[in-house]
Length: 465
Image (cartoon, rainbow, N blue to C red; front, side):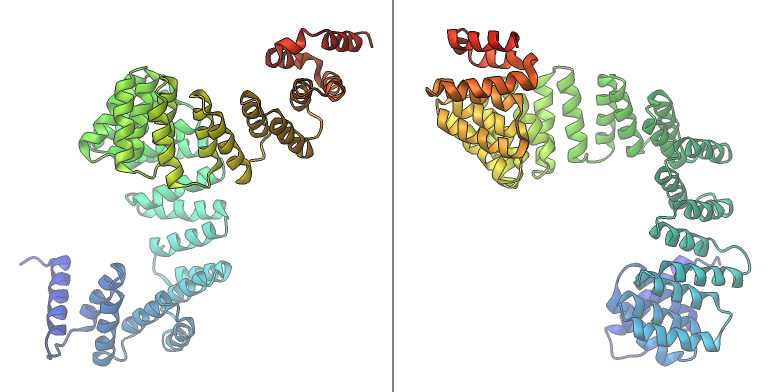
């Protein structure tokens, strides 16, 4: 009869949980307890792990592996003092047990004492008979916590030389290369890795991502295609391939790949959004709207499809629907100035000047001090013939931005319109002195004033200086 460790574990767990439902106490050997407790800890079933530990300690009080699991539980529960006391006791009993140093290192890591944790892990590594990939990987992670990606990389690479099939290790190696801005080295490493592991879809996928970062999209697409040859149901490869196809303007093929990912599993809101974006580029607006709506249905709080849909309806002069989706955005977060600015610009197109002005004012209240926001608000007041309000906004903008030709040309026009020619002349001269080439702004905004005798004389006077 073949021994199946997994089946044996589940038998032990069933027996233990059956015992908890009765008043009986069953005996388990120390290895059984160790497996049961590890299972519960790995699955974050802390209460059951505690119950198993209590019984294990009563049946096997002197077993160090059980006590080590007790220390691990203390660390998980942030009971650091108890963990330290127990681990110190175990160190005196078994000074050459590498597992004790590993637990001590995990405790120090939790306390953000990463250099000390590394020293203990190196000690554990010396005590191990061979290079232990778990310990090497833990050292790598500690170096990552310290943002020492060069040392982390060295340890993860050592791990992979021992265990070539651990995808997490491969991800960590690539991550370190990226944090060191060594994409080409990452590509070279992955190509060597693939030479030895040609059927690793993860390696092909990672290679594609590296090529894409360097805008080598044809190479990226080829890498994703190899990943899909290994695993035709690899959703990530379809999505990344689609992104690279977008980057080289092959939008129809991009849509095909996104849709293939949808067929394999329910798509995320992001994938539906990307499909819609590609249809929009192809000017297939019906399908664009369809997939924007799919994206919104998947995640009603994702702002990108709501923004895109609003913009698309504005382009089509469907102001009612544009305003509807912009209102949804503001319902989600009414403290985002970006949403209020979109709402203002939509109202300008209708045109609802008062609503637009209120929205621009909301942007400023929320901290949007961009010069263009002030200019847009002033222009909106001007369009609504609220010239004094327009002047007030520009004078406030001047406090933040000083003398800017865009402000002065507007102030000049507004003052002329409100019957203050001396102020109009002052600001027109300021604007011309700062940027005479931008006089076209004044000309387009105030054509009748531009043609007036007074303004013509001011411009002539300036030109003759």
